[in-house]
Every structure is written in structure tokens, then in C-alpha cells.
Image (cartoon, rainbow, N blue to C red):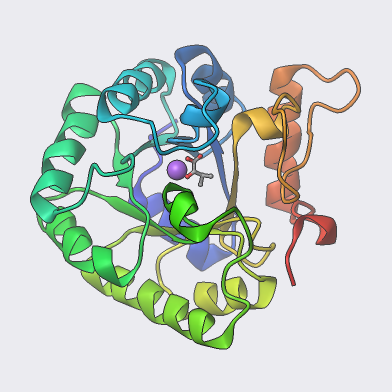
Length: 264
Ligand code: KIV
Ligand code: NA
């Protein structure tokens, strides 16, 4: 099967086929996801929490991301692989270019991801200009947790919601290829999804997004504190490949996320 590309993802949005994304951090899990039909594998800086045992993603370094992304691209053959840019690795367009080059050249990533709205527009434009596919990330931005004072839903306030929509459009105009929306009320995520030509991928953002993503360890039921928006797909007695297949099927069918995984 041919590799999933940005063109594939745009076509899926146009045709209303849900995009299935999951995180992975090593070669073995990447192989399972790739085999079970996950279209996009995110090597997330969530590895700081689920692999390294930190309380936040803040301590994760570029070297960590290069190491794990390289392992994932070794075994994935069909999925598009996104390497996450960690905290402080994209504070200028030049730094973002240098670090994106590491993820693509040393690790084989097909796209990079960064958090932020208006302040990142110039960086996204530079990356796009130099041929780096970019996934943006709005709503809850975990790298800013110490500034936010905790993990909670973003965009219930009308002014914040308006800003998020404006930021989403500005990021698309700058050349972003995809947008993750994290912990956003269902109606706002739906509005942003409709306003954009690029696909939106929700995590705690309702079922109207063009696709869904979860942290692998959350959906396998082995996270110490899985968030409200996650579901344990391993259930009673499923194997890991069966759990991944059930997640793929639930996202495709629109049965995940259900109301209890959403913010209204
Ligand atoms: O790091 C990560 O896993 C992420 C997802 C939660 C979107 O950014
Ligand atoms: Na991340």
C-alpha cells in the first residue's frame, strides 16, 4: 500500500473519511499501528509522561525526539509519521528549521508538529517555504502547562474562541497542513473544522473533527491517570492489535468519541 501523504489526508477530509491517528514511540508499536490501519503516527512529546515518567512534556529534548522518531520510522511503511517539536525547540523560525531538519533527515519524519497560534505563524510560513510539512496544535497546549496552571478545556470564553478560529485560519494561510485541536468544546471544534480546508484532528474536541488522535498508553489502559477524553480500548482480554483495530473502527464509524469523552 502506498504511503499516506498530505494529499491523501486532504482527500479524506473532502470525502468525509475520518483520519485515524495514534501516538507511538518505538518500532514494535509503530509496526502494530501501521498494520492495523492507523493513517498517521504521532511521535508525541507525550513520551515525556508515558515513557520517561515526567509529570509534563516540558523536560523532553530534541535528542529524545530524534531517538524515538527514528525508531518509529524504521518499521512503519504506510502511515505518515509526525515528529513533535519539543518545548523551546522552535523559539525562532531558524531554530525550528534546524530542528525540523533533524527530525526529517536524522529520523525520517514526514511532518513536524508545534504548539501555538499567532506567535507561530511566521515560523510555520518559513517551514512551509522550505518544504517542511507542519501540523499545528491549538486549544490546550501542554508545553505551556506551567503558564496555564493546569490541564483544562480551552475556548469556552467567547474571546478565546474567536482568537482560536482566527489563529487556525492564519496557520492554514501560513502553510500548515493539519491542525490538532486539544480539549476544545465540541461546537468550537466543529466551527474551526468547517472553516478550514486542511484536516483537523481532535483529542477531547468532539466527533466533528476530520480525525481523532489519542495517546497510545491512554487507549491501552496503562496510563496512571488517563484523561476524560480517552477510552480504554483494551477492555477485557483484547490483544494490543485488537484494541488498535477497535479504535480504528470506532473512529471510522464515528462512535468514538462519545458524549462522555467531550466538552460542551
Ligand atoms: O504529544 C502528544 O502526544 C500530542 C497529542 C496529545 C496530540 O501532542
Ligand atoms: Na505533543
